[in-house]
Image (tube, rainbow, N blue to C red; front, top):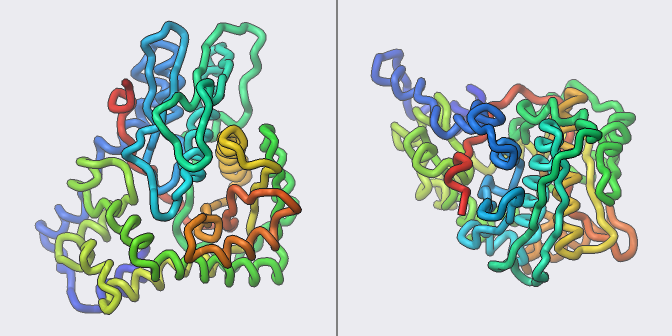
Length: 379
């Protein structure tokens, strides 16, 4: 969070003196919650665990990290979903959660290839339900050595991949040719398109801002996000998932009571108003948009969409471009129905499903997202 936003949220109601106490508050870093990034590919020798140590860094909705894995069968990873980590209000059919699981699988496959292992995936071997994920396996992954296997060029960008949730630089345009460059990374059946023209940017800025307002102004969907706020080091370390508000500014805001879940939910509060301004600045600074569409919308289509999505994110990283998902208009709850229809009219062909939409641009460097360690995700 930058200094200007900090001043807006605090409303000038506090002067933070350069005292030892405030310095201690502001310097607190959730070291343990970030450790999985440093441990990826380092602390495990067993091939499956080495690959999984990268997979847990995958992008996923609200950083819920909904994956659980069973390693009891030799050379096999059985992926299941943690049913306690769903988003029932904003993602009622678990479509976005499934996409996150696809991101996880793709990073696992890419990491295994680095060690000379091919991975054969059997998706939903016991079937699936389009209305909700359940206790049946999402995938059974079989590892086998393959000395002829090539390494994926995108893997080198795994550790620097981010979803950039800061405003983008309005003075830097996005080369339209980058849409094709990034889109070429999708190899699992997605159709990728995008636009950096002024007209398209204006139309999608407006639509995505309206959709974000709907999510915030719908009490149950907004509360779903606020309940997942992790404000300050102690909360992040205790639950390294959800929406991370750590770092100097948030530590200080939390310590002085300037940022609380209760205040954020109070629609009459300055905290609520300024928070909305801050998040809308993201949609309003998009310098282009990219979207991902599939012909079908089965669970397998959703998994493959996730596999392609993380590849797009890695390709954008390789190109030096920032991207952030703007999923609100794609959410399938009643209050969003009109915008869901409009976004499909704009971006999809007959029968297609828009699985992901993101904004593109150039943003500041952002930190790593907290993660549960791999051992916490083993059944």
